[in-house]
Image (cartoon, rainbow, N blue to C red; front, top):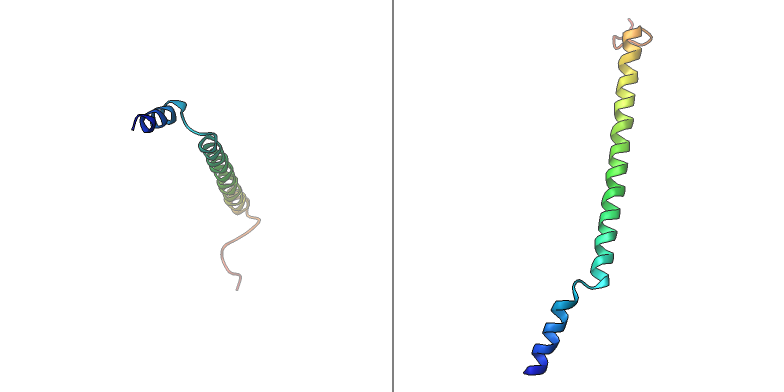
Length: 67
């Protein structure tokens, strides 16, 4: 019984294992990469919308069908 307490006490005092830290780093990295690509998608979408309305204001394009 004393040896079981000693093992549990040692495991608790060491802190997180290296694999847990690696998983946290991997998760943070993947989250940042996904967020970056999501933001790039939104910037692209905003740019296309802004270009459309700029062309519409200049009269270069029209949304009315020619008859």
